Image (cartoon, rainbow over all chains, first blue to last red; front, side, top):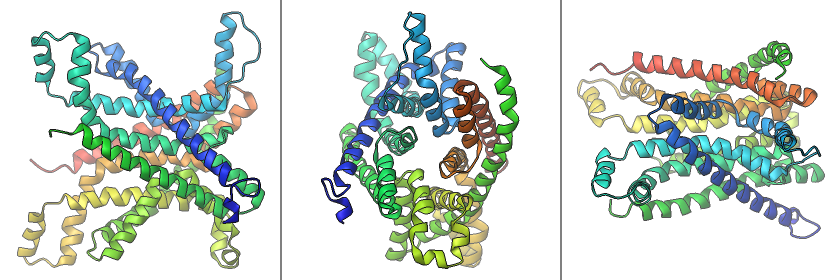
Length: 230
Length: 225
């Protein structure tokens, strides 16, 4: 137990901050994922073949390639790509990107591919009559989406989005390979300096279980809220 | 684009794909038995057996695969007693540690897939078997299991693809699988995009094959209309 003490003697406070970091990365990645889903879901649902192709390419590649490989691409290629873009604008200094940004971008793009599929499925399962009725009532495009489609879509999407959240949360453990100090990285450091890997990795497992358990409880509440009236 | 690098790294990556496939097939093979075993435990009426099987799948589905590998590879070696038993022969090899971790992980997911497949079997089918005087054991092996396997094919196909991606984590415990070799080439040449295209292409090709094999099996074993 003294291994987990707060302060200089134990690893309690370090692991606490690492847990906050995991939560922060997961939430950022999930939001980045929503952003990507917002772009690619319309592409997948579009009636133009070329746009469909772009949307399908994104979801197929990201869901077919290991997360770790995507993270390595971002970790080794991220600053190179940014520097290339900067060089077009006449900036030639070395640019280093923060591990947090690289990590949440990489996980975000992965999570976005899953979210895109969830949104696509949810929109497709809304009755066609709803779209038509909204049009007939003369509601503008903006109102159609925000007032009619989105509330119905969310109800259908939340159970699947909760799976995406679980996947995203667990994927953040892979960012530890880039050196960002989240739960896994902190456990690795603690295990190395105390020579007690069994304890620290098991404790990391408990922390992840706790996070998944708490988020499940919260999501269940959301689910109940959005399925009012059904 | 450095096409020379893409061409020269292709045979190396292809060689590493063999390691990935070995890890995948071994863990799927053992995981299927483990999953079936725990799915049967989940259907047991005894609350302790039931809860035990639920706890197993909850823990392995609720924690990242990386943690599981690290506990088995770095953690178990710490127990002095284990080092004296024959288990140590297996546990000191990263290859077997990875397979054990993958097996336990895929076993948890497979048990959930099979359990829900068993639960969707209509009671009428089992009752029909009973009224024909077929023994419980034969009903289970000849009626319930084949239907459950057919029911769970689509979900199990996804699990195979997820597991294939999961084997990339073997590279974190010093195994040189496809991702491990890709990382090595990237870190020596600093050309991530080229290597990503080749390695990612190989992974996508495997996903494509698995997807189509499952689709074929689904069609072949679909219920006659």
